[in-house]
View: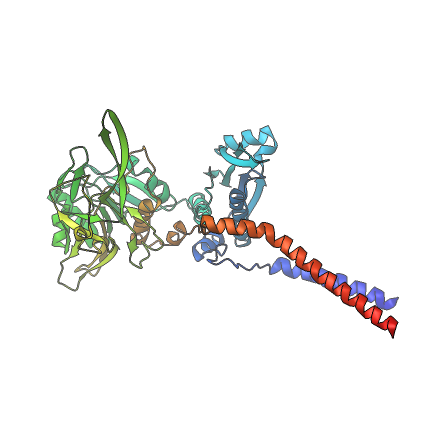
Length: 500
């Protein structure tokens, strides 16, 4: 009896000790192929720097189709990891708004609107209202994630939202104006991404107005007017003091209505050429390209067709560089070639983005023949450089960097359409790199990989279907024959024993 009591006491003591140790030294193993749930150093630094607790209210519906329910599970897994690295400064709760009308109202008032999804129930398709969003709050500051897109980079979504409300003193990044450049409104998607770390605002620089002293990175996007010599001198002084520039420039333009494209100049191309970077007055054409919609007429009928347009290259070849790491595809239109011409050792150029192996260049001006049947002979100049960074060492010892993209429109939206994600990522990553803040670059392109099942041939499907039906029957018959043979052998053995 005494041994039994001692065993019980020891068991309880071991369980209590194990519970205390596990609470103090809790760990989990991430066995996913791409370490999906392992937080980056940037995220761990963000969580470790929190001084006050952040609350997360996750509004997710229950009983969702498996592919959408996985988004909720992934979101929760991330929150567990975030809480673990936050020193108790992240508190989260999950709410199912479909349970009560009051919870639905609460979610919608917070800025999370439901989406309609298709679900199968009893062999019938029906639509179901689903909530997939979250609200993060730190003191009186709030950030809303209105919809968590399945497959989205969840770590970037959470880390950027936390940093947006946790960082109050953000450095400024200036968008140059007054020369027909793209406005803040036309760069709305870029601004949304940059506002995580910076205060992205319009600034004026001209003959008599220098860049603000507190700004270390300026962006010049799609200028259309000639930039004065005085403004260019101000930019030279800005660079000599260690400033950095992001330039997205059109050297050619095109009009699809009159199917004609020509060279244009704003003075920036000459200014860059003096520094050793020549932007060609040419069109980069690529067999790997986007489609455009073309109106056609056949008889009495008008119809729209999609036609491959080599003047809109899809750039998918990038150098191994922080600003382009993880990028998949950037869609450009009327891009030009970049060539490095500087001879001195104080200036270097790093090519960062290239056209495909099946590409070429055409000099401006050009008429666009939409009906042209392109051949491999048209794409005889592969791997044209369309983006890169020019670095200079100045006489005062300071270094400056100019990130150049030879398409001024790639990050610009007309408000009617959403741009390709990597079009935004390229500009935002470039500004992060120019500003020496690359912590979130890797996270922007870290998503859940899509791994579709291999598509089977119809003959293979038929074979598998019949195999699935017949194989169990065959196994049952074989099992029956084996059992029958075993029983027969047993009976024969018993008869032999009886005769003996």
